[in-house]
Length: 251
Image (cartoon, rainbow, N blue to C red; front, side, top):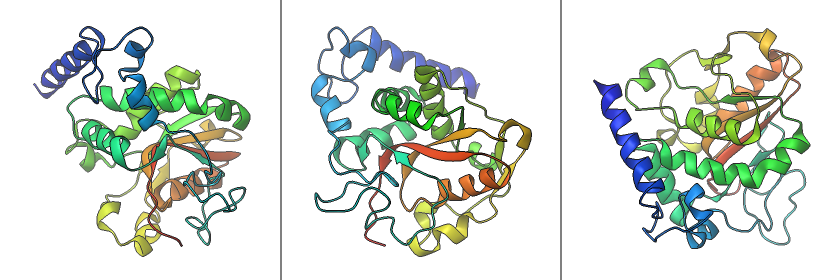
């Protein structure tokens, strides 16, 4: 019954986006290439702002005089196990609104539309990083009972479709249920994630250049601990792609 209800919501949202051809964010009538994005050009500019001074390590927006090659004021001092991250932009304004609406919707269509924008932005970086396998940050099975879908998985599926990189849902799992990161003090988020990931089949990742996907990156604890487990199991490198970067304050 739940599956049929969910399918109905997905169908209605896709119909509204593609057939009625109105922007998912502002309702403006879409034309031409805009219909493939589900957003009008004005909203795309807000959702995917021009990259200026973005940290290459954690994807945080920094000042014009900040060092962005190796670390920035937002990730300095943090032992991140992934190499680099890419995002659409800061977790604010319209992008924040659309991510929240997408995460709590019965349909994943909004998140997939945002992932398409991310795929367009990051295509060159994926090639530069020579990504060979895409892995979404997994949810614990108890979490899946509370949510209609795993946002990281739906984002990853769309990035996989856009890039041609294979996504695997059966390599990394959650070994235990966790207190949600948003309810955990910033200083304890790395500790909260320790030992929470389990590699199911190390043969699938040995020597692979892996792209981890999630909805947002704040301290980087979740992706870092997942990357640590993957690197220990034999992955060659780990990079991260998220919809938005939450800047939680220096350090």
